[in-house]
Image (cartoon, rainbow, N blue to C red; front, top):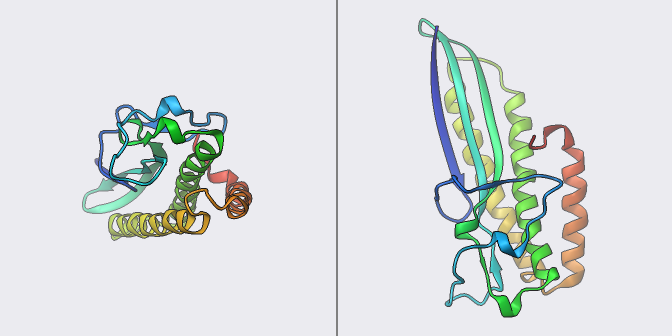
Length: 179
């Protein structure tokens, strides 16, 4: 039997090395010390969270037949692509940035759930890649909608609604959380 390993990753913001990435953890919240990139002087934003879903899979073959597969999926925060402006930094803005990371974890869970439904077949690699692409598109759209609807955290009522909804959605997919 041969084992073929493929590793793919896609970020919400930009591709980076994930050597220093922080994997989402329910017990570890972001702090301003995690944001290590210099601020973007051309941006009106108070901060930027660079996060994404890292995905890898292994396919086991026997002859030319695929007989098994396994996957790894994680929500990652990229410190050296994430920044904040010190004069605008406060707990409210940090909570907004944390929710961006939580949304990434939500979509990692949704991705794990979809992958768990797949059955071994000759097109499994293409199916996994297509799911990865679809989940990243949906993640990017949700992140943009979050910023739009909360006005980048300025709309405190909308911010609280988003926090409540994302917390509920994470709870619903708790069995698919990052380990």
